[in-house]
Structures are given as C-alpha cells and as structure tokens.
Image (cartoon, rainbow, N blue to C red; front, side):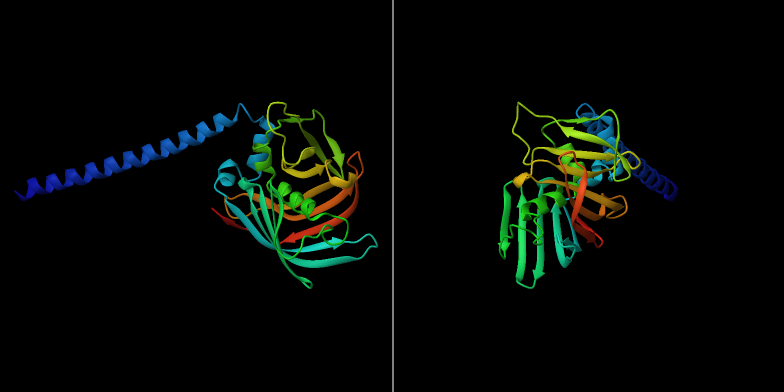
Amino acid sequence: MFNRDSATILLVVVTFFIVTGCEQQQQQQQQQQQQQQQKEELSPHIPAYLTTAVEKAGGLEAWDRTIKLDSDCVVTFYQPDGSFNLTKQHHEIYPWSHLIRISAQEPQGNLFVEFSQDGIMVIEGTKQEDFGANGLGAEDFAKAILDITTAPVQLLQCKAGLMRASSAVRIEGRWVYRIDQVDDKTGSEPYWPNRVFYQNIDSSLVDMVWFTGIDRGTFLAVRGYYYREVEKGGVVVPAKIEIFTTDVQGVIQHRLVKIDYHQFKTTK
C-alpha cells in the first residue's frame, strides 16, 4: 500500500513539473514570437539604418516600457559678451507623450514650465521669451532638449516620412548622415516642421538635430554627448547636451547652452 501510494505521489509530482516546465516554455516561446512579430511589423515601415539607430539607443523594447525620464542638471547659458550664467534645473521627459517639464529655483522666483505638442504652458513663474537672456526662446530650449533626448521615439513616430542621404558629411569633426523629413501631403504636419536629423557613422546614434523652422529667422542645432544607459538594459540618452546657432547651411556658429545631467532615472 505504501509503495503504491508513493508511486502515485511521485507520478503526480513528476507530472506537475513536466506541465509547469511546458507552460513556462510555451510562455517564453509566445514572448519571443510577440517580440519577433513586433520587429517584423516595424520592418516594412522602418529602414535598416533607423532600426540600427534605435537598437544603439537601447532598443525598441526599452523605449516602449519607458514612461518618464527625469534628472537634475546644471545649465550654462552663454551670453553674447562672452559671460555665462549657471542655473540648476530638473527635467522630466515623457518620450511617448512628446512632453517635457522644466523646473528651477531662480533668484527671481520658482519656474515650472511644460512643453508639449500643444505648445508651452507656464505652471509656475512667468514665461521668459529669452530663456537665459541670450536670445534663446523658452519654447525652442524645451523643444531642443526633448527632440535630442528622445530622438529614437521622434524617428519612430515621425508622420512625415524620412530620407537619409546616400553620402556622409563632416560636421565638427564627426562624419554623419543627414536624415531629412519628407513632406506628407496626406496627413497633418509634424508639430515642428523643417527638422533635420544627423546619424553618427561611428556610433549609429542620431546625436544631432538641426532646426530650420525657428521664429525670427534663427537656425539652431542641438547635439548630444557621452551617451549612456539609464539602467542596465535600459534606454541610452546623452549625459551632456549643447545648443548652438548655425548659418543657413547648418554650419555651427555660437554656443548658447550647455546642459550637464546627473544620473537619469526612469519610470516604467
């Protein structure tokens, strides 16, 4: 009787582990199939060079699970006379919502602004037309940070279509491919038209954006440096950002802003 019961119990235990193992294997296979299907669905819409750019920036899965990025930073505003002003800010960036919140404690009072596709909104303080008093508008400042930090998302969700140049150009010592937005006659225009992305040949990262559709006839370029993972297996973002004026050909002229970030944190 004991032997028969023992054999029955052993059979049940073995069966349990076999079934559990099969279920886990099926779940893993389903996850792999879903991931593969997701990549296959993107393949017809995204050329290989953009797929590589997204992978180098952490990959689609890492960006897909990132709701918010936030970090403290030190911002340096460079003045036309050669002087500069330092300020501490906190940036909250929502990649898939195309939204950034900027807060700071300034001598003239607290500042808290939010920029999205609907424009810029002052939550606390007053809107500064010239952010940092060096001719850079508050809205342009926010747009530049948002677009360079979330470049992979901007490229994936760009409605206008993209076209990469067949040959590379040299900008500030780096060889890059120019990626232009193509006019979309069938849908709505992007919230900031006339953007040009640049993909670094060495890193495959899109680490520069040139803005030609600025008010007051200004041309701006924003560049990212020292890209690093927010966390292991997470998205890759720049630890340093600089904003410049350029001429009509995109040649960099004057540096307006430098942003040095502390460690980014992510919310999933």
